[in-house]
Amino acid sequence: MLKAIKNIFLLPAIWALLIILSVILYLLSHLPRAFSGRYYHFLSRVWCKLFVRALDVDLKLVHKNSNPFPGHYILVANHPSALEDFGVPALFDVYPLAKAGVRDWIILGRISDYAGTIYVKRDSAGSRKTAKSALLDAVKSGKNIVIFPEGGCKGARIYEKFHTGAFEISLNTGTPILPVFLQYIDQDTFVWEGESLLKKLWQIFLTNNNKVNYYVHDSILPNGFSDKESYAKHVHTLYLKWQKDYLDEL
Image (tube, rainbow, N blue to C red; front, side):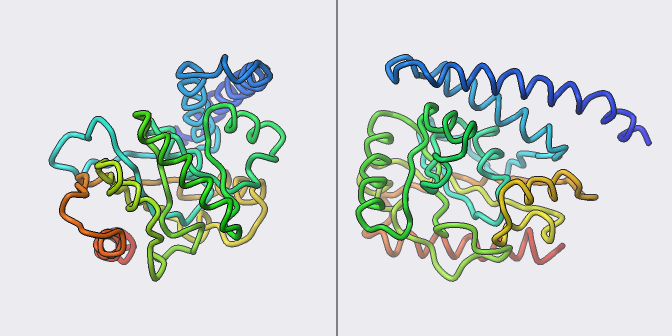
């Protein structure tokens, strides 16, 4: 009852703030690219936080790391839902890799593009090569990036393998991997299996169990690996273990 009363008053205020910030970011995105920068990236992260709250999602960052975050990292995570496109930037200072179609979304696409999102057409070898080069440049410039090594939404369970792009960049730059395991308590609702984005977000908004946990573990240094394949396989094995810890218990 208390939660229902709270939402009656709080959610409309959050949606109002979200709409206002969306308009501001959309207008700013029409400025020349030279006017984009850290301020816009910061505002886009605030937008993501508001959007998660507007969906009435109870998102928690759960620290399983015994050491502090590295100052510079490549974040990798499993990718079961649409929410992590907003949830990860809400919690971490990262520049994401997204599918090229996101850029065509009327408002969100323009905001994400101006905020520094890197896009890829997964079925295009040329696009994948260009995106990898852009990600490498971003890391070399000191930015944190996020890559979902499953290569897209593959369902609730960890996919049979991880793509090696994130691990190749880690090896080439000496940047550690920061692994985050995403747990959605209501898996049936949150898992994205081909629905339109709007339909999936509406389903998330209506869920009866809005609890979401992002488990962050200790970073993994690249100097213990000789090649990207063994590196990717090692991290994939960790995710299979965490799957037992965080999903099999549900």
